[in-house]
Image (cartoon, rainbow, N blue to C red; front, side):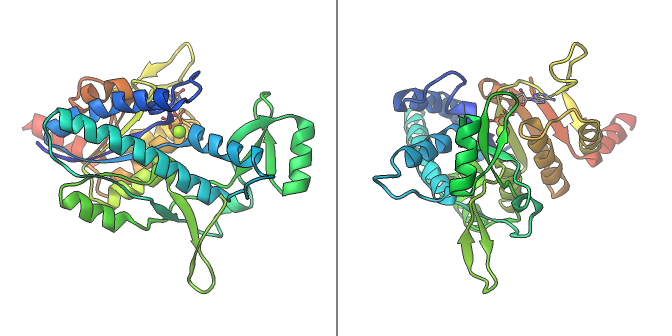
Length: 326
Ligand code: ADP
Ligand code: MG
């Protein structure tokens, strides 16, 4: 069966832990991922790709800061846009080459994507998302005073700037992305969670210095393009209960209701697995048929049902049970 699949690539798809991030190194990683994506396309599926941008936007921020006496600094929304351009180019280039090698003729397009957020989102009062490099306490105090940044101590590793991570309300380019997919294009969109924008009192759009979670934005996009499946590829093969503890247990299958219960029990922390599970719940409640969470390396196998954690709407379980009962 051919499905419409949104593939959400985690940060380590492009830059693995411990790598410095030279262009060739990132490109090699991207090529590896694109080989997998082409396998999925060969199965006949329609594909939309979203991706993280943590390390890349961190580097762009650092470049801005180091060069700020010579080149005017750009606000965070512009830096996110730059990272979308850079990664969108790298992914589309690698993907197009892999498709060509496989003898598949399909257009690939990267869409600079904006995400509407609410300017009254509580995150603007209480920012939670650490970005960029670490600073000493003295540097942090200076930056808070001089630049008005909000900064927090990050688990003994030093001080980091924190920015708001408001919930995505709508993907502004969402319907256009759907049209592109309908006409047969492979689309890369909502990179880094999208560029956050708010509507001002006059109804005009304005970028804000914030970041949107890539998994939550992916769920919104998946909904608009009417995706059947959301395939979230990260660096763990399966989702676990009691993750990292002696009684850790990996999950093969859970329903939305299970996911909510485990979430409330605290198995999925904010900033890592938490948003993926929230994204899964939201997508499945809004018409999605399945969410699969697995590692980049196991993407194809997970889609074939051989591994990964599969999350399904409650209704399909009762249907399966009903069928078995007949
Ligand atoms: P990505 O860049 O793909 O979004 P994240 O680091 O944000 O990756 O999230 C994936 C990480 O979540 C895993 O590497 C793992 O360490 C962590 N994690 C937290 N809780 C769980 C859990 N219950 N099961 C599996 N992994 C978990
Ligand atoms: Mg993440």
